[in-house]
Amino acid sequence: MLEQIQVLAQRRHKWDAEYQRLHRQQDWVLGLAAMLDVPRTEQGWWTHAGVEVAQDVQHYLDYLTDLKPHFPEDTAIIDHIIQRTQAWAPGLFHCYEEPAIPRTDNGLEQYIGILKRQRRRTTGHKTVADYITRHGPYAIFYDPGQTAEDTLDHFRQVSTKEFREERERFRAAQACQRRIRSFRRDPDGYLHRLEFLWQGGDDA
Image (cartoon, rainbow, N blue to C red; front, side):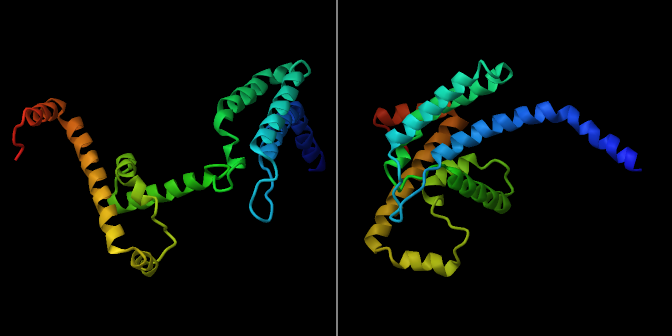
């Protein structure tokens, strides 16, 4: 039995080179992630400015470029890391100038996932893109952790004037989405009605 275990254990060594290669590539990605994970002060400000982080990242990409002759088998992954980072770079460093901007959109992605699941349970529809498009500006205020009483407390803090103004904006947004859906269903009919209105006709 012991000999059989030793034979099985020896078989893993054929994967050693591949494991080391994957581990090396993982370290490069994690190194870049650690560079972007800048600590904050007690007041919530980032300890590095955006331009400083951008310079550090560029130096790191230059370092990866210098590694390619030493790891020719990793050239494709190094090029991919560099290309993707450079593609994201124009919007990657603004968060370090303004503490209110999240460094990643992971929280938003998780929230949208919760919103989608809640909508699917309610309607049974698999696709919720239209719902997000129609109600996104308002659905984003939905907090699954709040109780009905919490929601009422929020409403009590809104004045009648503010409520009416927001209701009008909501109705205008809904009307815009209805026009879009109407055009999708019947483009020719929608354009015909639009031309009729332009000519001074009565749509009643």
